[in-house]
Amino acid sequence: MICGVDEAGRGPVIGPLVVAGVNFNDDSKLIEFKVKDSKKLTPKRREILAVKIKQNCISYEILVIPAKDIDDMRKVMTLNEIEVNAFSKIIKKLKPDICYVDSADVNEKRFADDILANLSFKPDIVSKHKADDIYPVVSAASIIAKTKRDEEIRNIAMELEKKLNLPMGSGYPADPITQKFLRKWLDRHKSLPPHVRRSWATTKNILKEKSIKKIDDF
Image 1 (cartoon, rainbow, N blue to C red):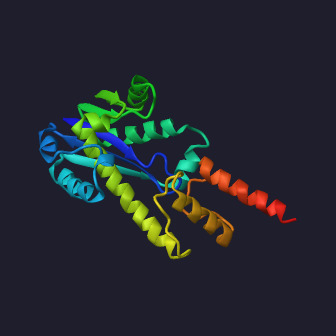
Image 2 (image 1 turned 45 degrees about the vertical axis):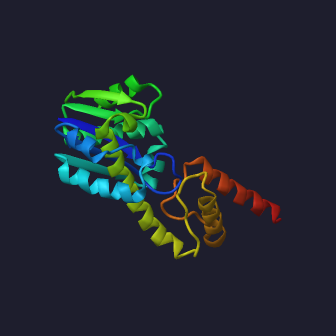
Image 3 (image 1 turned 60 degrees about the vertical axis):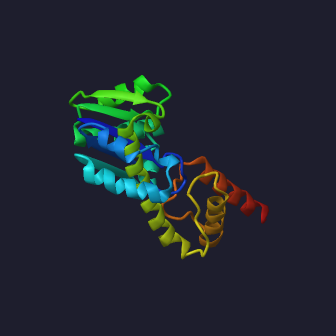
């Protein structure tokens, strides 16, 4: 039994990190479905493939880590360590013979070794950069993670946008729509909105800007 594990939402300043894993006997069905890295698929195609993957896999698992939990964990561990723990939890539940993972660490072997250190059983772990582009089973996991992350972001946008009457954007730090949304929210509500990662540099910089403006008012 083979397993693929991947994440979606490592970098955004808004919303959760989502990690997903899928189990298949082999990747023949996935090749038939023409799965690929979720970033190379349209949202509609991802949604269609996510349904097919869930219907045809042996099992799948999804772990959603909210922004607040990420902030709390980052007080005591790195983002790579957070991913190691999350990947380990998924693999513990799926219990595959062979597991293919998209390495978050620059050192692929270290990422695999760190995951294995968290497991009571010892599957073969193949850790590669861009595994979601190489192994269909990791592509499948990336699709499941990305569609779940997109769903979470839609729900967050519905909750927050009506309170500001502005689009929230993608939630990524480089998105000017997201940056404008955070600044406007801070101006109006005097605090950051829910679901924002306060440990991110983007958030800290916006808060610092606000603090400087307040000082300049005197």
